[in-house]
Length: 70
Image (tube, rainbow, N blue to C red):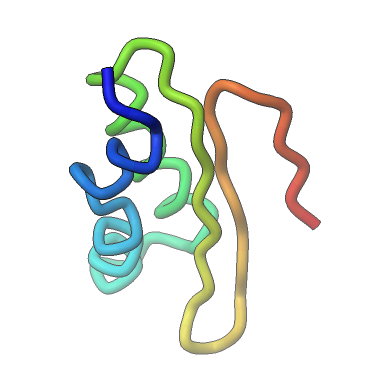
């Protein structure tokens, strides 16, 4: 299996986050959805993404490790 950086490049979670927010999801929902899409397909995935909306709202989501976004 490739490193998790390669997994991120394959799934483009940042693009997914932007598209999800464009469709009306909050940054938290968009980040969680992008990470969940990868986790469903890649066993043992470890990664995180941070989302920021145009109006400054922000959130993060992760899988495979303890991640505290503040």
